[in-house]
Image (cartoon, rainbow, N blue to C red; front, top):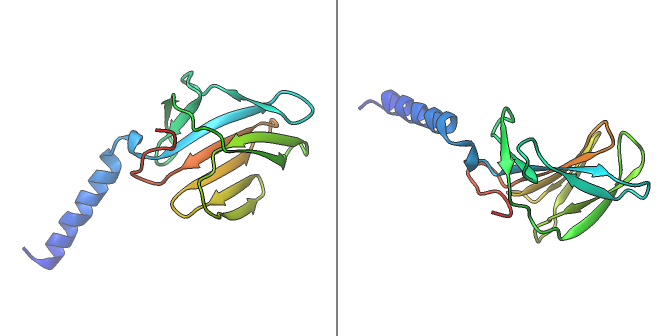
Length: 141
């Protein structure tokens, strides 16, 4: 088998694997928190499927209910980028020191292979997104 043909076969196999792999392989789960009082306390709102969270597909095109929830290790308070009010959300942070990234509408705790993102939404609520990387089991599994 020629080198070019072998490379083409490997490329096709990789594309088929990525396209056909079930969404459950993607370790990306989102939880939604809405403020309940002026002090910034929040409550979890169920996802579209009725579970506490939503597992998000690799490219974010589809979601499915996610019934497991990681045990919080921290209560983090932020100044909401849209409402300007304080909001407190429970987070499950792994051990280690993250690289903290501040963006216009989100805070990202980047641990390398694991990422925790707090995404501030225009209605004053926030999504907490746990991403344990492609082909890894989501947190709390």
